[in-house]
Length: 252
Image (cartoon, rainbow, N blue to C red; front, side, top):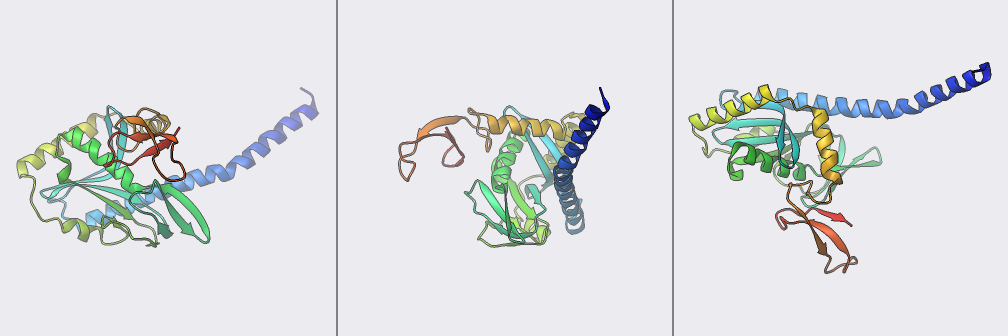
């Protein structure tokens, strides 16, 4: 290879590296923001809840017949189980229970992210099946730890403050000490023996969201439907067979 070809190759490598730096920086910052948000929630749970009453697990990846789910924080207590999904977001938050995507507005720019209520819906179903528990004793909470403000009406279990106070409002005892010990032992054993990693979970997410047979929201079957009204009337689409409990749809 002559000097001019070598110089051109070096220049192309440098240009490629410089082009990738912003993308790499953004990816690293997103990962760090998520990690830091989870650590803030972990600390707040430790600070606000009695560890003898609320047994805590963090970053639990559970495998089911229809992929994996990753639970940021899981509490086991006499008052039921609590799934806590952490979101580290700043600015204004817009969304509703039925929307597929929510919006973050920050310094005049808008960013969309997955509806966390849908995330916890699936987490709840998989955890219920995994532990053989009734879904009614599993509570889901979405906790925003960043300096954000909700600009639309959101369900009571979507919070940006007082996480411990919200959890402690559940006062009906639904699990005996023996049942709690059994659940904790099952989770402890699973966590210690499991070889699942975040990489496995990310791969599972890709497979689910690319699937045309499995609902990525709840894991039920996707079936072909026809829109009956609106501007898409007569158009075929894929919908979850668990409708109306699950309202996931996908264009064909």
